[in-house]
Image (cartoon, rainbow, N blue to C red; front, side, top):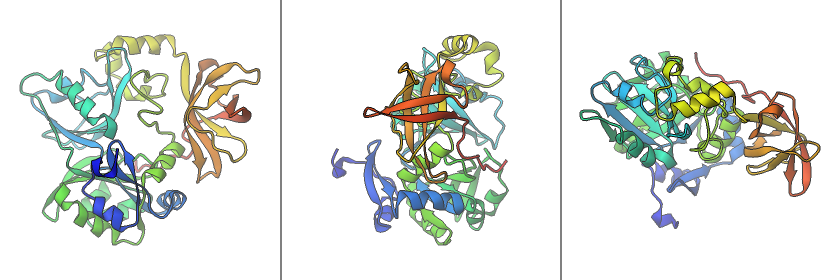
Length: 366
């Protein structure tokens, strides 16, 4: 796909003015990096970073019993989600696989859904297929979305929107900021405290420019976002989870609500329950490697005797730890912490050990 064929976010001019290196991601021209992935990663851990995630899909679900209707195709307890709160959940298929992982926020009069960029059109169609008359899904894919992440994020945002400073982890609110209706949730895909801020496309540039006036805040691109989420042990759709993955083997059983486990009455629930009751044959684990060479996605994993154990799904060098780390699916009988595993890197075996997740402790504001 040529540059002229790529979609752009409302913040595209600002990225280019800031010297971003742009790449194709999910059909969008997106910033990979500005000053460098390592610097952006470490600045997010030390101060605060701003990520443009407008390529993700925002949608509003409204109508009678909308939460109960949505529960037909997601694993979470949405009906029990209180107004002003957000929940991570999984959109499922008939075989108990993951169509997407998404965030659902109860804004009071409506549910706000946020889909992954490459799945948003699929997700919207998947949900609309089960909606009864009177319940509607309105996509807002042209709306801007930014992620403000890092230990200084709350102070920076509170200078513009004081009410945001009192939010807790997984809170969700709608605020009028300078006459602009703005949705704010407090969570984060970096493991750091942070916020996701949705604004109309026409107001995005001015809002971001005001935020960036704080010298503690720097732009960060997709490269740092990926290394940060890997250190935080957070899966990426399309790499670590997909339509063939059971949440149980992916370590996402927490996303199946306690009430939902009583009946498993959602799409694919029976298949998912079978994996839960009998145990998965593989598990997603963290791996730490010896040496400095990163172990990349696709690397074959084996034991000392050459027995195939699994495959790396995400891997790279962890700037905060100064060592290579990876996520991988391995046979359940080799998924215990401390287990020795070898990766085949072009015929050279590299020793790894199963490591507890996350690699870096989460610092969410609970």
